[in-house]
Image (cartoon, rainbow, N blue to C red; front, side):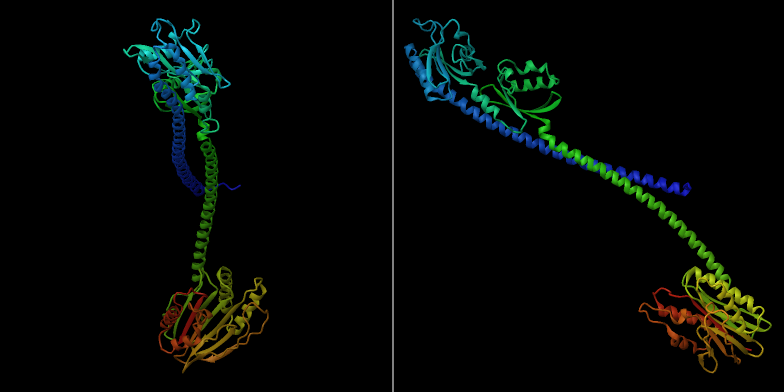
Length: 589
């Protein structure tokens, strides 16, 4: 396996750093977005839960106060009657009966005289209760077993000289039910406290009312008295047997429960989060006016934020998948970057090699003009403009024994293969023209050599000429190339026999031709890259435009420059489609 070179390692390191930065930015952006979304979603859900709990607390408080108000009104509205009957104690039982008859929420009532107030009855407390079958039963609480003067519902209103709601209790010997009592002191005409009038409310309806609060499926509600004693609780074993303070020491979050107990006993409203049984619970609480009771709704954290947490987990999973996809994409990008780098290096190397090949190819043809500055009988100029870095056109010339040997050729195809064939063709011309004297012989031997090794089926069109510099006699042979322009009294194409291009048919008999050239005659040789040059409208430059340019007498170099300028102006922005080669020979002998 090939080890990566230093430049590859550098690219890998740069890609790794860039990838890590992108991953960091992506992860930071995703996490920041998630945190912001989670924060606002959490706050919105909590606000919704708070509103729902508070609404339920307010609605429940109103229902409780409706019953409380009925009980309080029943007592207040009967105080004057009880005061009027103080002188006739036996009639007080009717007051209690009336209270129960007129107020269905009241399950028991008594008018308990202050001990010693009546000389006839040292202890007197007629009591009327509603039995399970709905009937009323009257009895007396003035017994040694009951001892009503020591009961909270009797002592507190006298001490406070105001209406008073008692702590919940089981009224054994009286109503024999779990109840709370509202009581008010009764004063006689002299302003002396004479008795206490009460109305008992069963806690059964309160348990049902509070127990029917369903803010969330697994939420539950509780009610505690002013001393923290459970009045309503899902755990029935705690009702009337324990307080919040009692269970605080048994909970893992004893400090939080103690603070909750303190706030509820102080009659505050609000919410707290406590931990119990390994779970966070949100407690929303509010006092019940005038009673000293506190109502609370407990909602498990999972009930409020469970959906958000589940969605958060899914979002986190998607984020992880997204980061993994980013990593895979970056890995692929890094690989592609490395691949593109290697391709660019290969391209640059290939371009460098093509430039070298271009320089080598250009070095193979004469390109210093005037080519024979010591001679006054010849004016020559030539140029080769390849369409790519290397091309398949060629020209060459040299003088041997006062004869000018020259050729212009065009290899089929373009690019590197054509340039290789061009190099072979030029070498063959140089070699054969160095010993042969006839253009036909040179072309014939070139064709045989090229046909013998032409496995690529490429061919070359070529015009070859041998000019006697002393006499002006020109031998020439054409192998499928464009006929040169002949400048004499007029400009016309040189008569040529087409023959076949080189490299197609071995042992082909090429027909040689000859002509006499006078002083000031000229030959213009070119490849089809000149006449077939296209503009953006796909129009060809053509032979007619070429002939029109040649009508003006110029030096050889000026003719070439004029042709190049005319072709460039005609082509415009269109890309060069083929190699352009021209050779101008002006005979001055």
